[in-house]
Length: 259
Length: 349
Image (cartoon, rainbow over all chains, first blue to last red; front, side, top):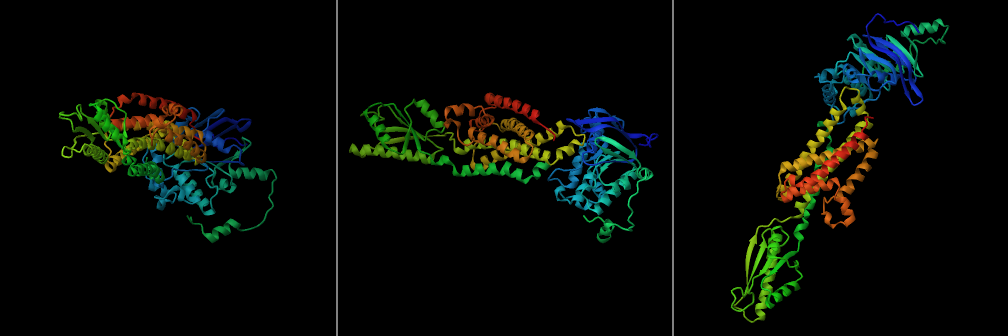
């Protein structure tokens, strides 16, 4: 593991020796890392590695058994509501009130933060402006996910938590989500995301942490991790192709968002 | 609140069903098939009066009450428990008495058919006596005096009961279902990801339900008054206060159920298992007097009994809420108990 790359930056997330057990299972087993302001930080790992638990502790939704975590200078264990006030959370599976349309849901969510929002602008941001009067349950999978991201923006958070934001999306919708995340970065927001997709991490993340069995087993820039591996003598069997099946799919169906 | 009003099914069950119930029962109006209830006060106490009473007793048309004092009979009449009261004045049938061929009838104006039937039958009996005496010109006369009575119809009894029942349904079902749904769909979890205080969210939920229970009471009472001519004796504001307390009891019960049940499939039978016995044991549709004693002893302490009784006393008997302190106390005790259980069982996930 290399030295902290952002040691000289201001850290918005600071995690030290975080622990959380469920019975005998150590879901999070001594995790430490920090995320700088404006970074896109990815947590990778197989299912059950402890990604979601780690993120939920940072979000103030679960109390840790040990260790400390501060977000924006606030101790998440001592003041979970203070943390929730400044962050935006996208859950793995999001559900919203039935019988309210999209812009009404955003208004309700904003009222929780005691803020007024331009719900149409928020929806336009995720290309859902034309569905503002639709019900959440009538949206397609990709639209649901985009709306879910829009809902995390109602309090104009400086830090966004996105838990597997592209799982289950078609290639167009995934690429659109990537554009959104890049846009957040240019707006100066910090993004912490979890994902199973390595090409997504490589495309988006400034740094990634790879978790397994509750521990961080590697943490660096994606390119560094790859060159480390190559330096250790790893060679992938090379198949020279100029395109893959996804390229074919996108070529045929177009890159534009379809729903 | 808006969310609740968008739930058409909830609106159906909350407003429409009780309205249908009260309308069906109201239109059937069991009260109109009543018998002619008469009371007899014999002040003459001679052979002739006893003969007359015996003749009247032969008639199947009458439901004759056991003899009680005149003042008691008058009271029963004005409470609507008699169609008419026949008073046989002293000196009836005695020669030279001014009341020789006179009886008095006081009758219930609110039951015109029954009292008219009763009077004409009595008149016939008297005429038969006249014929038997071969003294046709000197006919027996009835002095009739109308009394404005408060006639309890079935709808008067039913209306407060249906109001109480609807408050229970709304509190129990709408809270239990919507909370279990919020929980199972993960909406509560999404809310947990925001800085919303659990207390303020729950307060909003409870507030909405209580507003609905007030509206419900107003609509049902309104229908009863407008369409079924129910005379509201008591203070409407007091009734709404009762609706609020009762709403609180059943909303807490709903929370308790939603805390206990993980999915709607579990919540439904539990809520029904609570609601159905309450509905039939608490004297919503029929008085509890008809129940066997041990059952009644339990039924009297059910929350819906307290609520229905208090509402009924207010609406029908014109009682004040203070005179119903025992029922109100019963409700408050239930409120405290269900509230504590609800808090104990409540879970976000």
